[in-house]
Length: 203
Image (cartoon, rainbow, N blue to C red):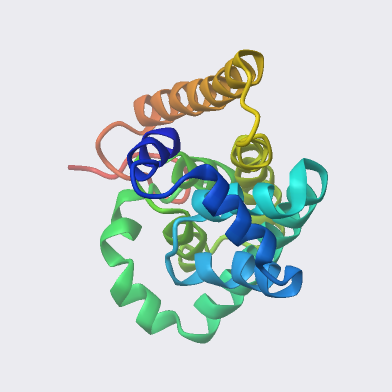
C-alpha cells in the first residue's frame, strides 16, 4: 500500500523533494511529530518512512522503537483517563474482539485486518489488558512491522533490485505470518466472541 501510494504521489512529488524536506526538519521536532501524530490517527507507516529518510536505518529504527513504546504508554494512560469517551468512540471495534486470555486478546486485536494502528492501541486497554501484557505483545509486533518502512525510507534514493527484493520478502514474511495467525485465531473463535474463560458465548 505504501509503495502504491508513493507511486501515485511521484507524479506530483519526487523522492528527492521529500528527502530534502525531511532533511530540513529539526530532529527534535521530527521525533516529536513521530511520537504525537499517530496518537491522533495519522498513518504511522508514512511517518516511519520519513523517519528512515531523516535519520537513516540505524537511528531511524532506534527512534521508531522508542516512539512506539511512548505511544503505547500514552495510549494506555489516555484510555484510563478518558475511558467513557474512548468507549463511545471505539465501541464497534470493541465488540469485534473476543473476551479471552489477555495475550490471545492482544494478538487477535493486533492482527485484525483493516484496523488502524492507533485504534488497536486504544482498544486493548479498554478491554482490561494489564500494562505488562499490553507492552509485551504490542511492542514487538508493531516494531517488527515498522522496520521495512524505515529501511524503505532510508534507501528510497538508491533502491537497487536486491534491496527492493529484500524489502518485499521481509514485508511478505511479516504479512504472511500475520495472515496465518489471524486465520488460526479466527478459526478458534468462530463468528462469536468468547467469554473470559475462552468458551464461546451462546448464539
